[in-house]
Length: 274
Image (cartoon, rainbow, N blue to C red):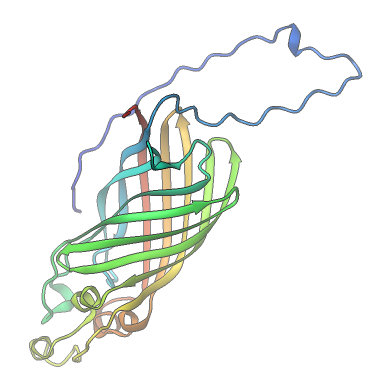
C-alpha cells in the first residue's frame, strides 16, 4: 500500500435545543405554516471558500491491471472564489458554474505477469476541472497533465443526476468517459518490438493511439456530519475501450473492467482575501 499523506484529526460539535415560544403556537383550526427551506451557507465577507482533507482509495495497481491496491490521496476543492473585477465562481447553494483543481494518482507498473514489458513508474496527474450544476443535475469536464511514469494529457467528461434527501446529504450518479493523448496511451498500452522479444512473444507488437480510453458509471454520496465537516464515498466502474481495451497488456495480463472505491474526510475553510 502506498502511503503518501498523513491523516487529519476530527473535531466534535455540541448542539443545543431551544424551547418553543408563544409564536410557535397556532389557532386550533389554522394550518401550520410550511417549514422554511434550509438556509444557504453564509460566506460572510469571505472571498475564497475551499475544502481540504484526506481520502483512502482501493483501485487497480495500474491502468488495465486485474490486481488492486490501497492508497491515500489529498482532497482539495474550491467551493467559492470571488475575484474583484472578474466576477465570482461557485456559490452558497452549489449551483451554477464552478472551477477547481483536478488530481489523480496511478501506481507503478512492474513485474508479475508483465515480464518483458518496460516498467512504468508512479504517475501523477494535475489539472483543472470545470462544472455547471442545476438543482438536480450537473455536467463536468477535467483536463490534466501527467508526469512521472507516463507523460501526456488526459481528462474526463461526464454528467450526474443529483438527489438531496436532506440539507446534509447529497447523492450523485451518472455516466463518465476518459480520454488521453497518444504519448500517454503509448506509455501504458503500447508494446515495442524490444518488449515483444523480451516477453518471448507473449505480448504482440502494438501501437496505441490517443482517443477515448474508457467509458463507465460513477456514483458518490456526501454527508455533512457536523458543520463544515464532510464524509464522502465514491465508487465507479469503467470499461477500457478503443486502443486501450484492445492492447495486449490488457487482453493477455490484465482486465478491461476497472473498479474504484474511495472514502474521504474533509473540512470547509473560508478566507477573506480582498
